[in-house]
Length: 636
Figure (cartoon, rainbow, N blue to C red):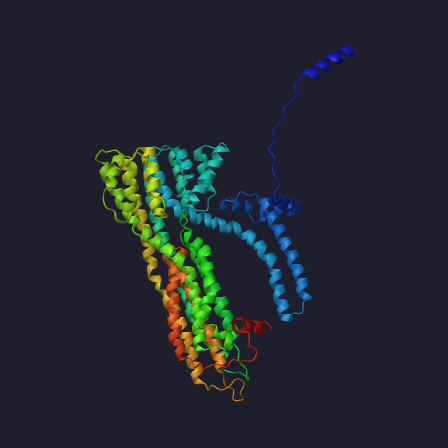
């Protein structure tokens, strides 16, 4: 036994040690820790809530890959945490020396925070679902045209999906292609089964019908090319009708905004102006409400309208962020640096010296605010104007270029030779691109590299998409005359789609201009008529007269509010025109200048007298008191 045991021992000692299995280390992140706490404490409740709210279907349609139980556990964790924090601050507010009404108001707001958190988590999948649907339907005409072009060239659906997953001209469709590739590579599904699985849970009926019909046509051996051509034309027609509905919705938003910003503003301005300048019981009021309405309510209304317009408008996958970066990195510092210079140069400093606004100081402070907004927006407006001038008319030129290329290709020349012949012609705004393309192909560069160099620096989606279609049809499918003719037809349809949408919105651009001028002129004229219709005596006189200081303060708020809100109306006009906030910088500058002139002209009729440097409670405080003082009095 000892001998046997020794032999076994020798064999064990001679055996090579086992190699350790490599297990990659994964760092535990804060998100992992939060998920662990959420599942540990709220997992048993989250499972039932996920089934009650049908979160599995909601998350699948939204394209959110989080497990439903985990999502609801996170929801409960954040809701309970916000509830505990809100209760803590409610107790803190209860022992602070604030008025009872203020305590009740703050406590109600804090108690509603957990409700907002819970409903926000529940509403987030619905918002993502709508965003997914809108993005896919915006790009679906491009994708359908691209798929039809590749199918005509004999490219399989798997290759098309792989290509779309890499193309930057797509955004929403690129995400869908990545979902399909995930099912193919990780789940082992066939390309058609992966396409069907993606389409079945998609929120867009257009996309779902198109992809399921394509899959059925391939599986049953039908005429796939004929199906794609018919369905692509239907998608273009459907998108055209949808763009009309979007234009009508935009017009409704614009009309509602102008109605609220003009009619309601005039009504409230008249009410606040009369309340501010005519004594009731020996006292005047309404200045604080006027300040809140001008500097809080109206800007918030404009921001809400911009969000509504942004949600309704079709979005381009190609992002052009240069104006926004310029605004933040150059415009804002320049505006802040110019403020003290403008404050002294325009005479607004008299507000600090005198304590009461005069005509010159009101115009000076209005010019200071307007000048600061103009300086902040001017660099971004210049950059965007150059971009618009560079891309104007490109869509029509590209459509003409592709039509001519198709005709030259029918003569039997190769695609590259056809491009060399066509690029020698004049295509207006497309000439810089065609010249660079001609030079690159002459030097022997590959078509894709030549096109990439030719379109470098351009951010026009239609331009990049059409050239992408052209390159892929030639590189993958050989660029047959039928394929090129299909590309030219789709390019023309896409161009007409974009032009029709812009044409329908063109008539609404002037509405913010008319609204801003009307508000600025009417509000100050109302103040002028009100001031002239009553006797102006010293403040606090038994006769119940009004003082020039009260009228001057109201005139100051009306002027500054008109400048700020006219600038925001210009942002709205730009958003309506081009679908981008950057387009609003130029309109904001123009409207600010127009409103400044309007204020300067109409303010001459307001009965302002030279002010003395002594106004009760304002001596030495100047501008900060004039802006913040009424708000301090309002909240006690």
